[in-house]
Image 1 (cartoon, one colour):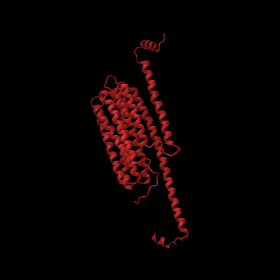
Image 2 (cartoon, rainbow over the protein chains, first blue to last red):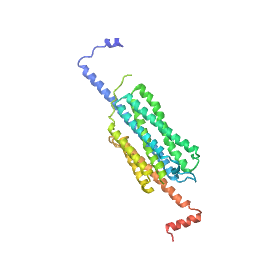
Image 3 (cartoon, chains in turn red, orange):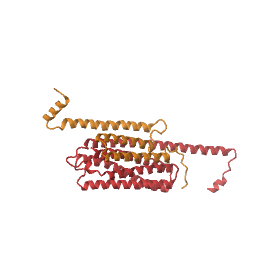
Image 4 (cartoon, rainbow over the protein chains, first blue to last red):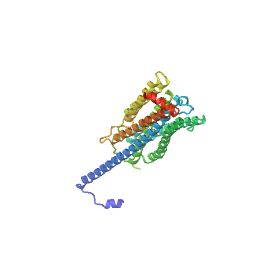
Length: 221
Length: 125
């Protein structure tokens, strides 16, 4: 390699600016291509999120229709432990916040901060999932599983689907974060981190409505 | 591996905007929680308030966390979102409407009783 380099005639002074300009324009082309790819991928994922919203809309509609069909069993008022649910909500909200901060760090290519903040997001996600599963096992042990009534079937389907999404998000972090650790914030990892953060914020928005419609309205009426 | 500088467009948010969004979301959540647990209002008022708070929080999170409407034109993300909203409203409102009607028309006893009660409710004769 070095032999070839020395053997090559030195570029003339006149040619040097042209080379520099070419390299610069090549870099610009890469940047525009990456930006386009980033925008397209993000938009495609956004469309997926919108279809996921429609899925949740169907589950919310089902729940709203069945919420009073307790079949002589307990209603939300007797089942829901509100301080517990508030804790779940605040944990998920904080995780959405740390995820947003992690994306700011990613834009500055601060790898350690990205890993630290996504690490916190991951732990908060685990905490949320643990609380949710605790609630579910508690309900099932008391004989109030999805088989008890139409209301509980709809409850477990809606909240369980959200929990499944959270699990998917956690697995995604588990796959993506070692990659960021190894390779740093590159165009590729940046793209994936952006999609992951969109997904996580989206799940928090879905939870606001679960919190309001399932839990808060459940103990009100 | 050599670190390459990324030349992507600047992020929409700043630490301040994320903190503002987070604080607002926490306040809205806690407000909704206490509206319900204090039992200070009649149930219908409570439901109206908490649905309002949920929609406010939806807007806060869409603006501060997902940066909706801050993309450059054409705003395809916004268009996709609005279309989703339309589908969502059709699914949710339509389901409640149809199922509410079925509930009213079919669950008030024997066919004869249903006939009588509907005749009475609708003011037929």
